[in-house]
Amino acid sequence: MSLMKFNKRPWGNLVSNDFFNNDDFFNGGSWLGKLEEPAMNVKENDDNFEIELAAPGYDKKDFNVSIDNGCLNISAENSNVKKEEEDNYSRKEFSYSSFQKSLRLPESVADDKIKASYKDGLLKFKIAKKEEAKKHSPKTVEIS
Image 1 (cartoon, rainbow, N blue to C red):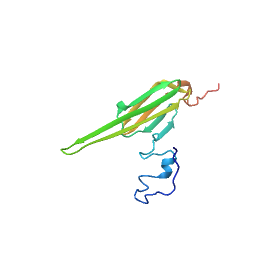
Image 2: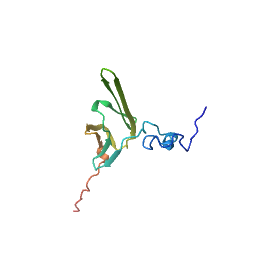
Image 3: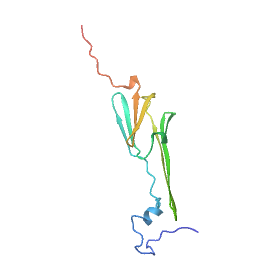
Image 4: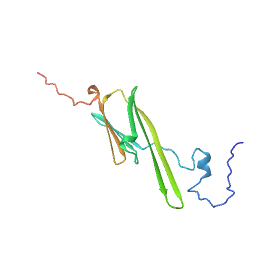
């Protein structure tokens, strides 16, 4: 058996486009939404690189950060279970989210001098450059 795209919905407009979109479903989307990588900003300064990763909804303990073979590997995973019980019904809701991201670090960084912090949904890294890679002010030489 195989699935075929059906351009006209046999059920008419009973289900809105916001909930179910045939085009998204057959082109890699799903009913539960799409998995997306967090937005990221990278900024280079004279002495370091600054990376900001938007990852709201996580706790500091949800992150796993490592450096391996010149790559900064960032992953996060969390899950949540809400359970509600009353006399005549019970309801349980599950949520799960995760992501993985790897960044190749330039050879100019000192990978032993990386600082990370997480606050207000923003994971921040400050990666120091090696001394020889830092921009230095030109030095004047006096002529005698």
